[in-house]
Amino acid sequence: MTLQPFGRGGLSDPHALTFNFAAVLPGRAASPHTARAYFRWVDTFLADMGGLKPTRGDQRTLRMQTLAVEQLRGLLSPPMLRAWLGKLISRNHGKQGIEQARAAVITLADLFAEAGWMDETISAAMARVRTPRAEDGQRTGRWLSLREVRLLMEAGAQMATSDAQAARNRVALAMLCTMALRREELCVARWGDLSKQDDRVVLRIHGKGRKVAPVDVPPNVVRLLEPWRKLCLANTKGLFQESPLIRRIWKGGRVSTGGMTPEGVLSLVDLAAKHAQIGHVAPHDLRRSVAGALHQSGVPIEKISRLLRHSTVTVTERYINRLPQRNEGALLMSDLLDTADEDFWG
Image (tube, rainbow, N blue to C red; front, side):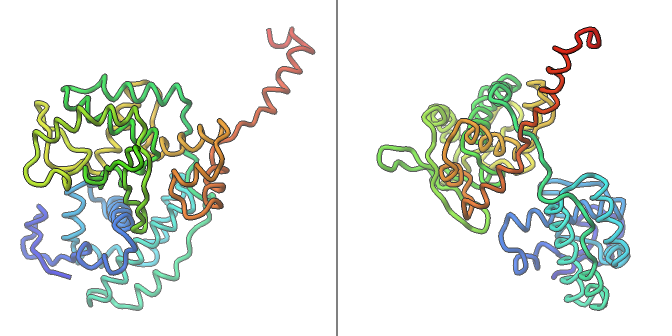
């Protein structure tokens, strides 16, 4: 915990005390993925209950480093937490997401009290707030058809404003749509994570819970990587192997030395989906679509599980069972009625 003036965070009172949640969270969060998720939920909590404007990327990290002590004292309470979780229910968040949201705010309250800024009885009472009833598991999301996946991949290059951006978008979307990467995994990938094993190109993926797993890179993606690699190599200072695989693009088309953020990948997928006119699509929808397409084509679940990097096949089975399966009874009944009474249907 550090005390810093609000002036650094752009707020009005230069003498206000701040709490550095980002500095004390690593001891409680299981992984960087969990820490990012906690930042996102705390930011949402502050926006919903404190009236602050939502943030992303570096601005969100800065906010987590300079949380207003007095504001937190007013927001961190069992009634406020209970009311916020109710808001999440009304937005159709799934049980898993709401439980993570609850854990994020309770962890913030616990660390805040541990630092001496709040009575520990309040944080203990917040920990006793139960998760409201919600639908089990994650939100269903979308399962894209192969045609929709192709349209989205093509749109990434079509909407680009420079050759470099087109090359980057092709690589990023191709990896998401074939290798079932999570957006965080794509962002932390380095050029040095690529290697050749038994005459195959393999990417070492840094996944959830500090897990590392090799995944074969499809030949089509390897071909897309080569022109993108040349552009990155020309704009890299220092060790190329340690540089980000997927990077930001400056206005004018210059390749940045900095990697894309998870929010940047979210925006890329969303913009490509809109350009392709297929509605809203999130990066995780592409991961679902890979799993669904492979399952539908008869690929053994063991192979799908290895690609998704799940801990057990049982997890993969549950994952696939959550996908929106066909339920064609109504269509069949309509066909029966259609043949029985064509006059009704016109």
